[in-house]
Image (cartoon, rainbow, N blue to C red; front, top):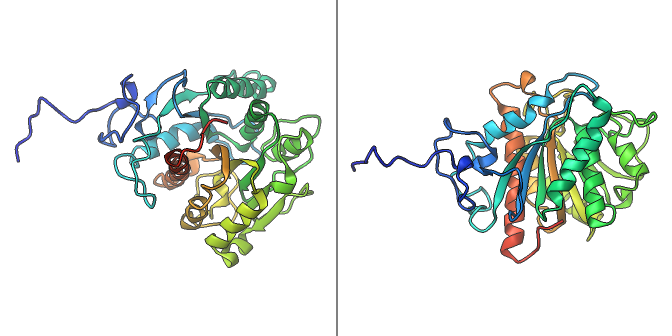
Length: 327
């Protein structure tokens, strides 16, 4: 079969203002890097979903590097676009429009102003009626995003948190710390603890605030289907935000993170749980704590990108059955 070299396959769909739907069919080793080859739009008005990055690592307690997480997640994601999403079996972009809105902008020289900047820029995106998917960044970023989201929907959310850590350490005068964001979120009424759950915990913390916990050993014993069922029962009909700290995975599957803890979920277990959560009243998602300087062969970034890919597939299925994606 001959091929005309003057009519090559399309490239740089990220820069094509008319590209909204369908797989991109581009070489994954060349071209502009956007998340899943989606078109870049600073203003996501008219799109179903807006993906953005929050490149923050000034609130980590151990190894830094998560400011490079959004870029690594985008790069890893390019290998995922082009085929129907397994195991959902559909082109998730055929009927659902997704754009990459770039990264949050803030001045690292004024760290105390960063939380308000993240919140304001999350609120701007949410105000357009798009569903927000966030690439981190350390786990503190979930706090200002939750502030913006709960203001938009008018009340707290159930939090489904995949993590090795509870992140419930003492909040000393509003410190900016990735280990205290749950404490702040509970105190501010952003999450409903009685409907929230943490999966994969493998450390001790001073409080649980009434949030249910499935630790790493229990998750392995229960199995993915049972964990998903327990999440569904805990959340009920509440609006839900899913936050995935990549250190919920065992370091064998995610070495590129700041505070790795042995005994975690496998990537297969995490994906098997996530794919069963489409019946929840989904309002937002983030994947955080990917630290490329400690990654090997990009496996941590690929795991994080695949998790976000699965979440988008859940949203695509929701739209197929006529459920709104608007927060």
